[in-house]
Image (tube, rainbow, N blue to C red; front, side, top):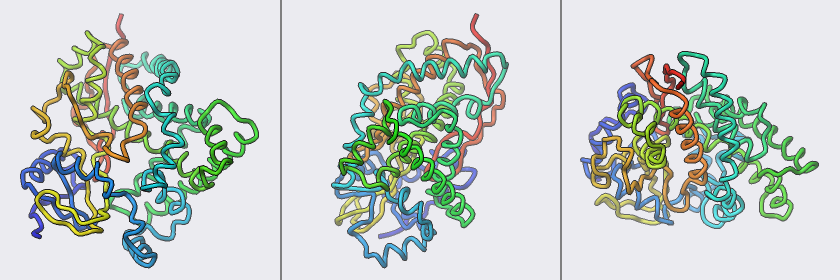
Length: 411
């Protein structure tokens, strides 16, 4: 099985500036590409990525595929070891479990994230967004990410779960410090930061759990306490699930808000169309997720031998699913590299597929719809202040580091 001679460096400036050139090379090769730093095979075409994501024999966890000794050896090689809190509630989670465990954990909270269940949050999100913009509208320009976008997902998810608003900025910091350790570069410095953040996050959630146990409220953590008491969660599963809810939709929503706004600024005709017709917002949001997928990579392990991309792979092979590439595949999407706000159907993979379809996809779209409708209704002449926008580096994230914009309040 030959290894493709394609230079794939997700930490290079060239990749963060434009990953889609290398994605195109990978797709056009027609084969899987071996990525040595993570000992996995990258899949780039929509058909291949979708097939693996939907296959129940392609799993997130290595349970059943390796011995305890092999697990320890792999953890040491990847610098995942000697992190007691991280191993208990981050390396194990709803996201990284499969089969009966995954189904049990997902079932407990699935109903809270349906479109119908989260509809009651519309007024919560609208009020919070309006309040932020009331404070910012006197300024001629803002840094869109840190002044505005970064405040919203944590507040909304915190509200749903039951975390006090005053803790939201700290929750964001912990989430970022933990998530950064999932990428290729797992230095000892990043390891210490991730473990400390996990420990502090753990004890925060333990204290919040104890408080809600004494005085239940109408929030998700109070409902989860009932499930724990009835044996549907262990204590670590309870904490891990709360932590995942707070982390999972946080950074990715901030990233797609930033890339979505940047894309609109690069396509002023699309921005004008949305200002004139808000009915286009839902399809425009779907296109934002497709065009710049905020979580462009996830992995799967093969529980059985499989043939994919014309190649045979053994049980135990790890695949890297390049959602960001699949969502630009011209075999699936006409004018795949064009941003088309009326695109329909739009069966993008930004939320994944199969058993691990993103639980918070309805909440993310609700946030996006309210945010962009409100912004485009209240402001005009929105422009980039700094034309050069630098995107984050790495395999697992896609979003601008900063986005300096100017605007005018509509009369």
